[in-house]
Length: 291
Image (cartoon, rainbow, N blue to C red; front, side):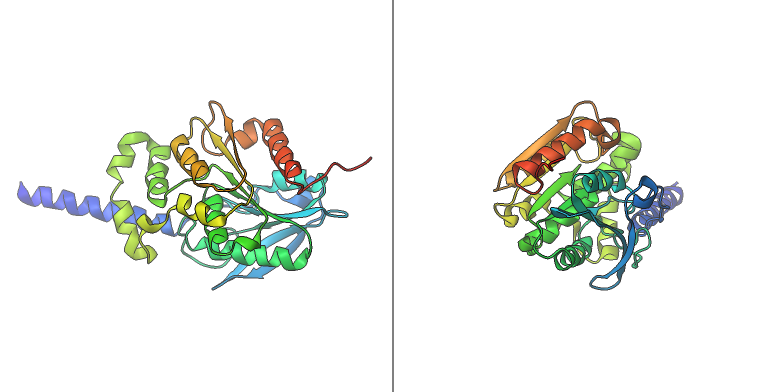
């Protein structure tokens, strides 16, 4: 009986270890839409980050008023935010969409859910600053991308003039547990909770040290817009509130009732885009164009 119990325990930890490993080495999902397909000019770009190259698209607007850097979420790629970039192009903003490390066509094999990805965001923002010299730079992140963007700006606030956090988590440990809750409910979250500890040595850092709210405090008086669903089971609404309360500059949060993680962008595009445009215009990033 003891031997059987021991075998079950060993098997359980092997399974959890394997899940943690695969979580850090995600599958690469294919591109499913592009700016060119939607009718915008599409230029393939390669940006050198700290340890690898990032694949991306540049969308050049006619007489651009700003440049927006789009940063996708976990298991996604540059295609995720392409529809938003297309809308912003129509309103006078150039855009840069990148693949984070271990995603899309970028280099790297290990994903850290935003922590190391902050270096990718820094590289993208530097590229945007250099290419669109003199224009305001905005970074819009989805889920993991919003965390990576907040972490990047906490270290180099001058790289962007505004941050938009879409479905952002507040603590990395909460995001890991939230991912399991998102996939299989509270029971799966409890069963796979040890992945938080097992992933740490493989990732090379402690997930308990990554706090997005603390990073937001360091960004300073920069406009920050938050989008969040009231039924988000991955990044709970309480995490969005914690992030908002940590911001020291002009901050707003837009709630989407009865929506989960990032889905409102597809379900309520009119509200999403109108709120985004209103915030950009409020802070003089974009202005109304004369016909």
